[in-house]
Length: 406
View 1: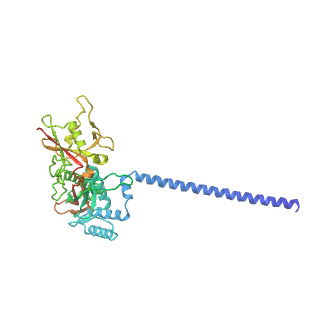
View 2: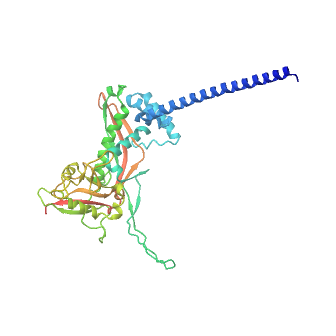
């Protein structure tokens, strides 16, 4: 091959290599550009999701299924136009479709419609916020009023043995059958028809706020003093007695023990010593579960307790509430309930113990609502209801303080 041919071949090879590198560089740049574009798109999507997460209502909406959101939409239309037969028909059809898909929308005693999942969940959440007992007692779900619960009385025995020693039979704990008493818990909020027709009126939030406030107050009072007639049986439905946990015969199943306090002043008042005695009357196996151990009293009793000191010149025993945590007394949280007796002669003004072990609250699944746009011209009444039951399940886990002047 002569030099000219060699030079031509080299030039051809050089041109081919440069072309290939140019194509590769161009492809690399396109790949880099595409990658940067994809990265920017993903970043924008993440920022959008974070923005949605920062809006509580939008996040709630996003967490429910399409069927749930459609059900809520036709429900709100019906609430705004309760006399419109087309709205009723669409709501009935939506609930029928949900029932065919095995979606639980609650039982419907006495007619009416089940509350949409999103609204009922918000009511549940708000009731838990307003009623301290929802976070203290044992809350269970049940499907009928024939609900029974077995509780161990904690009187079983155990034993010791060597590696090859004999083992004698131990006593099994006795079981107590608890049957909560049930009732229908209801609320009757009322709104003007003009407000319902106003698109700027947030019907959903109004229902959540009104219903949950009424239910929370009624539940808390029933857990304390409910008489068991179409409502839960309360802790103080039967007056506490002084009989100790280990006494024979045992206290009746629904009766707790009280710790007596003879008030050194008139009118009667609390003392730190009495509260210390009350705390240590509860067995250690109950107070070790500190997440459900608490004082409960009336807010006026709290006002008196906040003035108590460890000694005449000592520091206050009360610790103020911090963000996310309740106030404490003697190291235990304090919750208020207007259903509690105020400080008075022979009143059981303070309750203390392990509420999860002591009390059972049973929810019948489902909330229902009926609208009445006819009884009062220009106004619509909302009859919202659910079934709730409750009863003491372990009367050793909770104690009362009884104050007297003799």
